[in-house]
Amino acid sequence: MAHTAGAALDAGNLPAIPPSTPITASSRQKYLDRVKFLEGYAVRQRSSTPEDPAFVTILDAVNDLLARTDLSAASKLSYRNAMVWYLREQGDQALEFRQAYALLQTMSFAKDPDRASNRKRSIPEADYEALTEQLNEMAASSDWAVRALVWANATLATGARPIEWLAATWDSSKSVLTIQTAKQHLSPPDFRRGGRAPQEEGGEGADQEVPDIDEEGAIEPPLRVEGPERMVPVAQGLDRLMVEQHLTFFNAAIPLGAIPAEREAHFTRYHDQCRQALRIACDRLWKGSKSYTLYTFRGQFQANQRARHGIAATRELMGHSGRVSGRSYGKGNQAFRSIKGERLRSSDRQQHDRGESTGADAFDREAGEGAAFDVAP
Image (tube, rainbow, N blue to C red; front, side, top):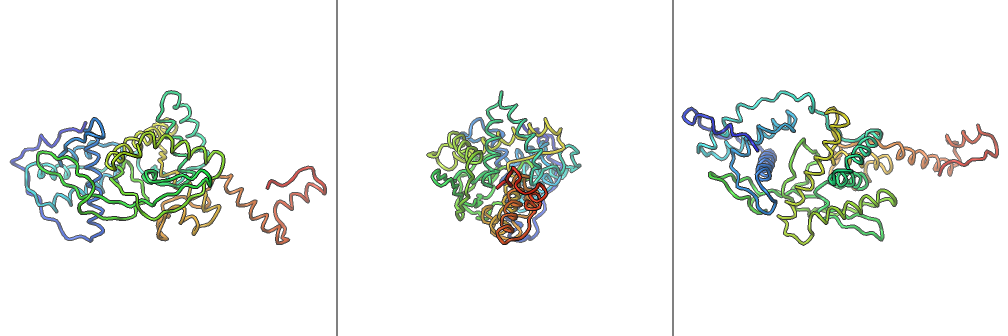
């Protein structure tokens, strides 16, 4: 539960909230989105079930932000600035709004040495193997560790954003996952004095491509997944097994026939539990010095695909619409060793077909004519 520092503020000494200053349309939307994240987090903190959302006030959201320890200093600052702007923009001088504004002025942003800037955009193969082993150990007593491990590997096989699994379809005959690129649609925050029930999706808002940065502790917003489709081929073997197993777990926990609001609520719980399992595994292994998320595995998918297919083809598989979209993810030189080996062998074969000397040919010559082994295909 969030602390109640807001209640201790002396109402008589609270200054008025100053008016907001003009900002760009894109900055306005970013601020609204962040405030909506905080509102959704406050609702979930106080709801016993996703189907029965709690009433929350703006003080609830601010107190929760003050109490959170899972956010980096930079993330906390971005949420704080968004809420300050929102309070100024509303122009509401009611007591709880002025209390919330005063609390935001007290926030400090000292870096947490255990978690500051330790989230990665790709995962070294040795860390991937260690994390897999740790989650397997945890799986003996935690179903969520199993689900987290399967989801991470399904992301590594497909590059799908977490929210995109809500509308993903699987063609088992072709081993292809069809993904609709997520489009964000947030209804504006609407804190009201005395509490409020969360509104259904709708009203004002904006459709935009979901950001490719998984902020520390950020909460998935209500979303419509209705962007352009992309088709991602999935390799036979472990990749296909992980994708099919993840879809089995995912669709059992998030009923396809439920209304969108209920599916989003079930998704949030499932996502949060898997993310928590990953965090626990990382803490046990690296004591806070390293932290990997589902988005890390999306980043590693990009690194692997860049090593295989190059930048342009990978952009399509990732669902990126612009040149800068993939900069937060893994690079081709961060691909797993086995992927780099595939590319080297492919390059050798192409040179061999052109009659050029390759590293493998030289190895054959060193071993002598008629050596009793073949170069790996």
